[in-house]
Length: 221
Image (cartoon, rainbow, N blue to C red; front, side):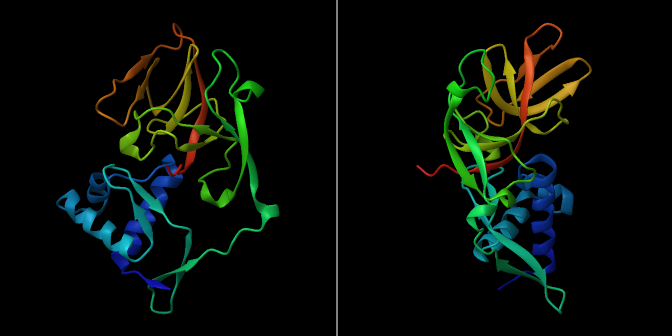
């Protein structure tokens, strides 16, 4: 069992809440602002301590590169959170998710020509039940920890809240971006300064939300 201090437990809960609400972990700056730290460096030190204790995994070089490890919290009699490994999930409880590779222009996401294979995954890995996995292409979401070749877990939706990570279709192109709507204008925001914001006007552009990101399966290269 891993012993966490009250502050470490607070940060771990903050990370869980961010993932539940947006599908992705907070940045160091967001953690610092939420908890009243003077700088993001203080948040970084706490994250490193959590990583050393095996509560999280940190991906270097990304602002949101924080992954909760497969553990569940339990509270000891002293009020300190313990972490216990989750049991292996029995095969009958795993869910089957189709993997979408390159999307054929103009075809529905789940059209047969877009499906590469099917994966058996633990539904507890995701903030909501996904409908499919999408193979990520490119580095536009690098700083949120979404890398080229990763498998994004996606729940089919037709609306989204500002700040959520979405899969969107513009014409025949499919993209993964952070969603922001102001009035009738939609902006699709990258998480990489090398990429530009995409501005969409639904009444003029052929636009559709294909889904909401609810988790990520790391594709180890």
